[in-house]
Image 1 (cartoon, rainbow, N blue to C red):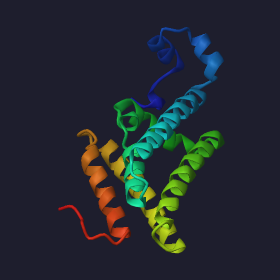
Image 2 (image 1 turned 135 degrees about the vertical axis):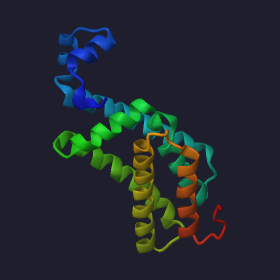
Image 3 (image 1 turned 45 degrees about the vertical axis):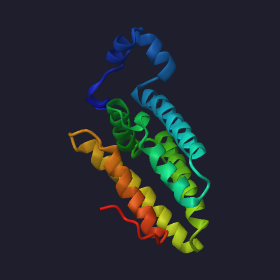
Length: 174
């Protein structure tokens, strides 16, 4: 069940708190979603930083690490996936949530573009970055809606193939 089917009273009960306390700290469901997404976005940022720190410094390794960070367990758990879907839908109607979405989009695009620019001309790097960002989001969305569980390995392999192709590497996975 997504955010639309939940009341603040239900959230408070599940958290073992009073509805008044939840209302005090979050205001309404939009405030609760905003706080939830701030945490999920922090988790995403930390996961991506950790993956990049473990990876080699070359552009391909760094791009693979960005992919890995975006498919981190903190981002593909059932609860996180529901929150992301609610967030994307609600960001169409909320300036605060839309701002968070723009920040997240920009962070992903910038990190990817920076790595592609190390190997590609500027315009090609920008196109490749837009493509990889869209692919990560699209693979995540398809996985979240599949109903069969998100296959992180398959999604990562598809995104890595895209990176190899854009970097002119022939080693595509079968």
